[in-house]
Image (tube, rainbow, N blue to C red; front, side, top):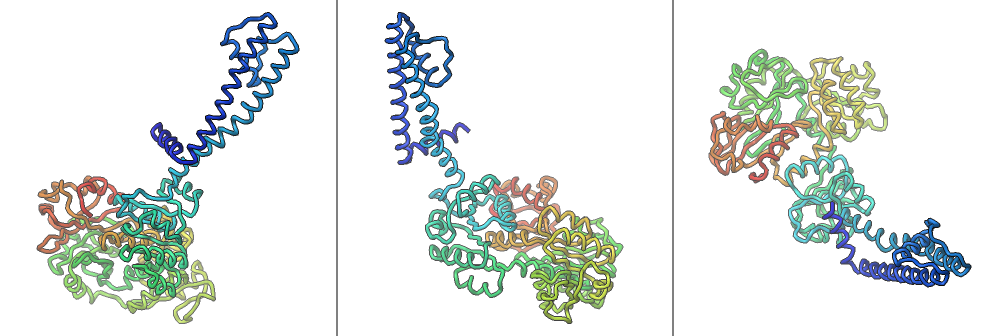
Length: 567
């Protein structure tokens, strides 16, 4: 605290205005000191004329008490001349001490000091040696999650704020902000955009276009990620210089479509790491039901490994004794050929698919429908607003809380219900309702606020996805070159190099799961990638580990090993 105060005072003194203010303060206090000295001398002269004698300390004491209007009355003049002198000292003291001194102190010291404090909390530029940082143009749901991820991976970042007031507000929230207009090239020069690892624009389409065009004028190489609401803006943003245009509703819609089981027991790939594919598959109606993973023979017959199992939104890491139930969803890892063999074995257990029911015909609902169309999966959208209905054959008009409307959409036959409204309270309500109607149906729900994810799972959702996490994951993958895969809200697969402190140790000796909560899913070496390696597998220098864990577990791992891990 003292060090910070000293730095701020030094900053004030070094500035040109600060030096001018100090000269004014010096003159003011010099005049004040001269007045006090003259009044003390006058006090002695007049007191001697009245036959009273006091020390010089007493004269200074009388002068200060009269000038400050305290006037204790223990020392007084007995002549009119002395009383007139007292009035002069009193009036000048009122003017100098009660009026001019507070004004001078505030104007020439306090306000500059507060301005220096504000400048320290809301700088207009980054240090000259800054590089490899992430620049963000807006603070919203997506960038709030992104900032948490950047801090986990120890990336420097800065939020651009249009005013000092906004920058101070962000600073008070614990965020790093820099004052500057995003449409001003000087702003981007001061934050060294040409040396940034990533520029992220999440404002409206027009502002994002301006950001991409301005930053691209400084550098042809810096990666620029921008969001787009209007589909027509994608081409314009790319022409302006955006490296990647993110349509969040399209991303979340595609993610919903990928995770839709559609009534079949086939594997559905949700992501990949080089040649390793990660997929989900339902076990409903298959011979796997009632068996443990150890007795299922999956790895021997198909070549794929079970990473974990879902039971009504609750995820557990795969254990040999883990039992497969009729509503279990397997998280699989293996090669493309292995997943093909898996599909060949279990294709005959797939039931005819009834249309997927989508609740909500907004942007996310329509994007999900388009993604299902691409996968040739039939669907029905339940929408209350007539102006959102584009294809009457695919829409059912009415409230999703109306049983007759849901039955008309096919709630009794469908294998999957996707809940897409923006309001989390509505989504919790619909999740509970659909789960009571169909205990066996797959329910995928959208979440806006992170704190509602657990609530949606408790309500019965099998999977929860949100704008914020999906957008943050895309941005992090631009930094890590697709080394992070969000399985569902709060659960991720991520790839890291083997830390130096773990080289030469076996997986069991490392105790990664016990120390961090993350589990090793696969090991990649020069010889290839092996999913679910044995506990006795030795971690060699230069190898990559694919880990799975919650956000907290991932943070725990990075806190423990980031200092000697090149991610």
